Each structure stands twice: as C-alpha cells, then as structure tokens.
Amino acid sequence: EADIYQTPRYLVIGTGKKITLECSQTMGHDKMYWYQQDPGMELHLIHYSYGVNSTEKGDLSSESTVSRIRTEHFPLTLESARPSHTSQYLCASTKATQETQYFGPGTRLLVL
Amino acid sequence: AQKVTQAQTEISVVEKEDVTLDCVYETRDTTYYLFWYKQPPSGELVFLIRRNSFDEQNEISGRYSWNFQKSTSSFNFTITASQVVDSAVYFCALSPSTYNFNKFYFGSGTKLNVKP
Image (tube, rainbow over all chains, first blue to last red; front, side, top):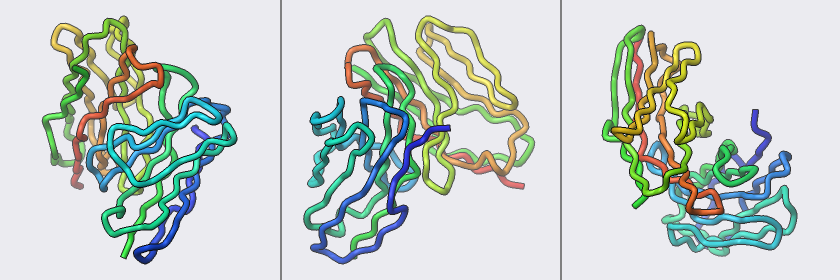
C-alpha cells in the first residue's frame, strides 16, 4: 500500500482564484511527479522533481508551478485559475529510476 | 521513439467472460520496465504489475495474468472470469532506462465495462 496523499480531493473555485494542491508522501521517495488527466483519458506529465530544491517542467505545458522544499512535500500552485484548468491532477512518487510510480488519490478541480 | 499503444479504447463484456487488454510498446532501449495500472471510477491509479525487459516469464496473480512477448513488443493483460468490480480504465506504461528521472510513457488507456 502506497502512502501518498493529496488534498483536497475535490475543489470547485471561481476564475481568477489562487489555489494550491497538496501532495505528500511518507515513503522517503526522492522523485515526485504531477500529472494532469481528463477523466479516463491519457495522463500528461506537467512537473517532476529529482529531490529537494529540484523541479522541472514535464511534457505538457502548464501554467502551474511547483516547489520542493521538503522531501515528502510537492505542492502545485495555480496563481490564477481558469476554466481551462479544469481537470484531475495526480501526484506520484518513486524510490529510484525504473521503480514503480505510486499514485495519490488525485484532486478533481473544477474552475467556474 | 518511446511509445505505448493501447488500441482498444473501450471493451464491454458480460460477467464471467475472459477479457484480454492489449499493449504494444516501442523503445530503442534494451533495458526497460513495463507496468499495468488500474484506474477505477474513484480516480486513483492502482499499481498492478511491474515487469523488466529481461524477464519474459508470464505471470499469474489470481484472476489476472500477463503475457510479455519481446518478439512482438507486447505486454498483454488477461482477466479471467471477469467481475463487475473489474470495471475500470487500465493503463499500460513503459519506463525506459534512458531517462534518469524515471519517465513513464503511458498508453491512452482501455476502458473495461463488465456488465452483470
């Protein structure tokens, strides 16, 4: 059982609001990832991190930003949410290269 | 090129039928890992299996079995005697050795509907 948590699970907000999606893992994994996914559709990597103070953009361009100040914590921030940001956001972590990525339960975001 | 293709977008079966989900991958790497994940309607991705490129033995876990064939670059997943709880979207993924940040290449998923 993977110990990776995401909050909130569901979020409905208005356009222009700033939001932070939280992701935490208690497994001591160095590598963490954020994916964006429309329900049941393909996963798109938007951010990843090798470890503390390391963040990189993924394949899909995203207006979100991330930070990695502590190993266990990898929050994602949208400074000004728009309806186009409506999606599910999945956080994942892994111990090492080619090891299994373990996923959190996801945050479903709806921007009105 | 690194790519995973799940050609079956959606499959519907009746409970107790066997069903096979296809996964075809492309990679130039000789060392890589393949994965299957299940995504139920609740949204989380649940890890099912991890297989490395040097291990072509088929694997069985309860009603689930996986057939890895390097010759055809396929890693197919079979559910025997399907149940309604198997209804989900299933993703196949490839992790080549090229990238040291453990990049996964996901297929587009196959939605399985198991009807009672």
